View 1 (cartoon, rainbow, N blue to C red):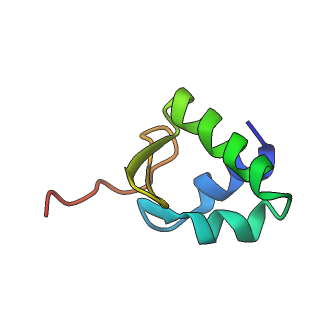
View 2: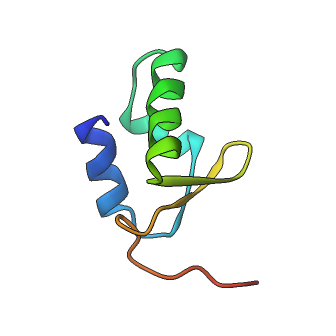
Length: 68
């Protein structure tokens, strides 16, 4: 996984991240961002909640998400 992306997940203050936020760090082409996100999904670093919204996986998450 991209080191910039891992640093983003480690430093992200919330437990949810959007694709717009990811695009600010990975300024490469859209297919490149898509590939990085897909690798993170397979690894468990991200969990898809809905299109464009992801829950950060336990190794990178700073807070526990609410059940609401």
